[in-house]
Image (tube, rainbow, N blue to C red):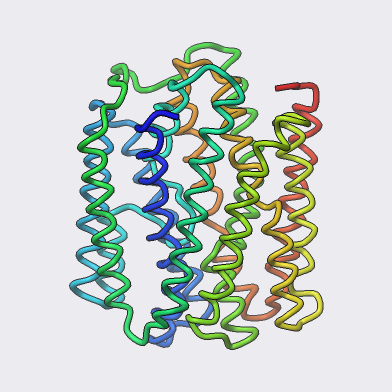
Length: 382
């Protein structure tokens, strides 16, 4: 595995650490200002809308790939610094506007499209490519576990030190981008459009399917799951941090297992079979209204929840022609971002009247995606 791939996996891990700490702490931070579940859901919704807008702006920029990444990393660093220096709600919104990131806990930044394209060029061997994307995602969830452990041990009464750690990590990401050489390209004047009709149809089909999955995912992002445990079981930051330690450790190792499963049954079946199992477990999380049982079903969900991610990354970066991968990955990230926007608002409203309903709606929506994806691509034997 090339050293550059290791560094790019590390930058994704950095972002995962930052987004995990924000997803867990922000509901408590906003609650300290007497924000209701609906208010918190709206704030997360707004952050997703801003991040989606930034994604399309970054995609349209006609500058070299490395310069684009450096610009994104610099604004991310500045935004986190703003929030660290002025710890209040107004400056949180200013930071979101400057940095263009979401509070969902997921890395849906424009960085990924360039990182994934770069990594897809390192090898044409399918098994090696599967391994690269498995490690890329493994590091992300391993870092999420470290972030959760940090919050569990630190148990912040003030969040300022957490925000300082995030600032320092974002500085490291910027330094890594400075050091790495990226494949340089500039979008054509009419934009990074996909000209081939067959590829365009494939991208539209995948984007439509991914949008359904993301709509369900927006209802149960890490911030909303945190809010659920806070509202229903009255857990504090440290207790929720402990839950996410286990969640992220399980997820990280399931990512590695995904490589072997996809090598045995193929990418499409790995994506669908594992995802359906996870969504059945998701449906069961609130059913018995007992903390221990809810945790168990959440952990069971995580055993397969993200196994589809490296398989999906490998699938997309194989079936899409090389010259269209950056633009198509940007489309998919934009769709996933955009379709998650309504989720937190809906979840915040449902949380006020029937918290379990959030999980029921999300699970059924995501299962419908699994079935539709399998019907469409079951003949693909990659």
